[in-house]
Image (cartoon, rainbow, N blue to C red; front, side, top):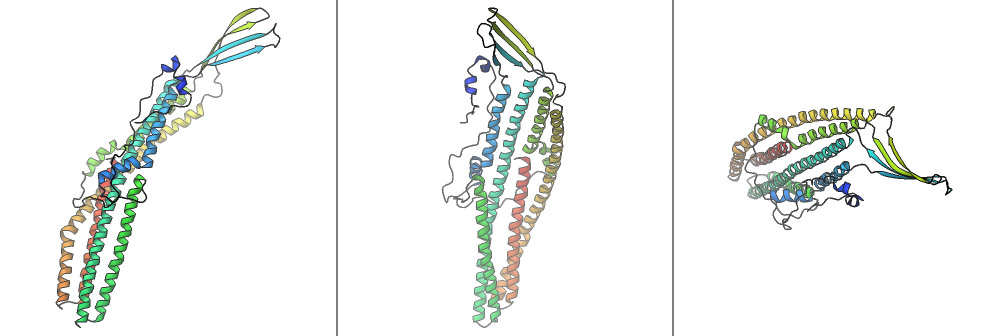
Length: 421
């Protein structure tokens, strides 16, 4: 459970009747969830577990939540009334002719300063909540992207291991045929080179896997991940709505919503600066004791500053320009996000078509060609160069399919990131 941290001295002030009448701020629902169960060390990691751990352990998200919570104090401070003051004065140090006075001064805010101040503080708090929502959506998209990067890296290791096994098999075949005197020793040398290259690719794939694991674990502050294998499926290609439907959904994106609220906050700041053009009034009331006359006198007064030079014109101008600037930033953001949506949608469509073509035609054909070349080489009907060419074609097709698969998921995640899904 979260609690509100009150500023120093506020608890004592709340005990007074005037302070007790002030409204309390409404708590902001930006608490970060706490993960009850985490995967055991070495245990499998699901996407749901990764999302929960990122939401509970990401320091940037926790900072965004604390920012929204901290601004509750700004709302509290904006609602309080100005403090009165008391003044004590003594004229003449001789007791018989001494005059002593005590005055109580009460400042009265004019021009709607307090209401404008409250509105600006509430708008700032609302912006912070929207920024937290945006940060949470961004973190979710980053976690999903890193999780699928990890799945792709795991598939890459499996592919590299499979390619190494294929290269080892080809090297064994070449060695047997050289021993039988059917092919020159150069064929065996070529096969060993291909096998060494495949082994190097295995090491590179394992390094990419470790990097992907660290990238995912860093999202919840775990630079040395303890989880085991990521569990997920890459068989079903992601699909999203047509670009026109995505663009209609764009107006509800968290980033745009946060910028709209920022415009409202800037407008509220303009209201605050405009209210400062009106001077405040200070009323005083007190009593004066004149020892020489032997009587008490009542003191009443009013003080009004004359706004002859400082009418807050500079601050008002700055606030007005910054409000216009916020609108320009919002329009620029709309254009940029719309372009990102169009680009991601086009990339997703192209990647899906490429993945379907590779999976349906290229990969089966490359696999069939390699198997035919291998059988022909074993039977002495073809040379080892044919086997190498077929083997490279198969490896390249598999690597390309894995890259296209990664592009497909990255494009879909980019759409979800923009829309805050």
